[in-house]
Length: 435
Length: 200
Image 1 (cartoon, rainbow over the protein chains, first blue to last red):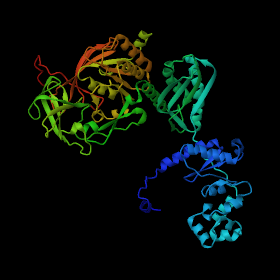
Image 2 (cartoon, one colour):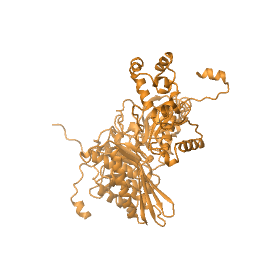
Image 3 (cartoon, chains in turn red, yellow):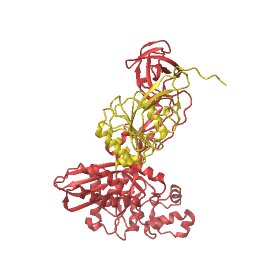
Image 4 (tube, chains in turn brown, cyan):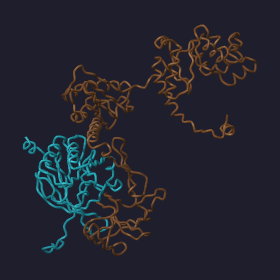
């Protein structure tokens, strides 16, 4: 039914757009939760789950109790669901979408017989063609000879019918779970020495790193949780300059954090997890000297970043803007790749830039004499002007004074300064220094 | 051990070559230009350690070509972290040059620690200090000033070496264009004492 028709029937209808990505995520988490009922749970379409509960119901007291337990738990979290238990996957799916219920052993044909043919997972055209010849219910199809049916409506219909009735096998194809990068270790006696914790950490790191290597992943952050005997938990977290899975190099970064831990009466459990894995294909290591140098530099960035913060280890990247303040971008080294600065053409740029500072006692245009930072300057030579217009699509408070005419001023005192004049609000400011 | 080490160190080539695996100091208003000149003479990654609150930042488009991609800027909070960063960077072998701008006077202990770190990592360091805030442990100390030029297409610098542990002092006026690793020496203009020989 189109939305306009629905609104015409019920003017107070509250609607909101579908968020497919979040729906898929919600279904995935529901699938994870449904693992409590069966080892094999698979997604079924965009709105269903199929679980293979062979050998499971007696743990919940029978099929009826299992189903009522499932409904009760989902109702408690506010989900209204429909479910069915049947001998085949096709029958359970068809029944769940047409009323739900439980089909006992041997009642399969009678149970699904009353369902419409569209419950067979066939396309709309086939269902319509079937209803045109008077085959409306599944029971009408079940008794018919297969060969003419396949010739007229295609093999897909027969396959679906056989799967529904159990003549063809259809296992539950559960997709593999995403690997979880976390390892833990519980100790029979509490430990308190730093060397003991580091030894335990080394064992955990070996296990975690081999798991990361198996999945071609590298850790970007690592979190070590130390549980004390008094049930308190201490966390030590480190970041890495790039994806890494080398136990020795990672262990060295933990040393400072572990040193600061208060062990209390002792630590009896360690848990190490990599919350932010990144793809890291296997590569030849220790070969070329540049690889070793890159590794050493990444280690240095990791060490620096873990002490002063990764947002303080920076790299400057050129951007496409004529505005001096925005002609470069500052990025953390750990999250960016070096970009070469394009060879500069056009007017010279200063090596040092700072927020504009007023030049006072200016005489002449360009200034022949001015004061800046309480120093007097006399102009020896002036190059310019270079006019830079503000970018109208950004509202930059520093550029509200309008156009700027930049001058490179060589002074008799030696300093080579970058001054600008704002003709719309007459004023002189100093913004940079040349080498 | 250290004395023995010093005997076998080759003498620097040219007046502006900084001795490898040592920490040097530069002061004066032109010290950043001197540091940029030195980055061109040191291949490999360059680390520039700035205090967090320093408003005078480097501008990539004005830097010598090729420096932007090998430059890393560290902005640690506080003087202790700054010195720690410098020491850690000096200890790392792949770094070509470490430049730092400490805000407080360098103590002899700090200067000595930096020298030991530089020797351990075979890395050169350059401290851009304020006037008279250096440490006695430095290998050389330079005074740098920009000089007004007589012609329009030259950028003159006055670089003098005030302290040198393994060499002599001296002062030069050079013309460095800000892009190459070479400089032009500028001879001093002075009065001629005796008449020149007549051409033969």
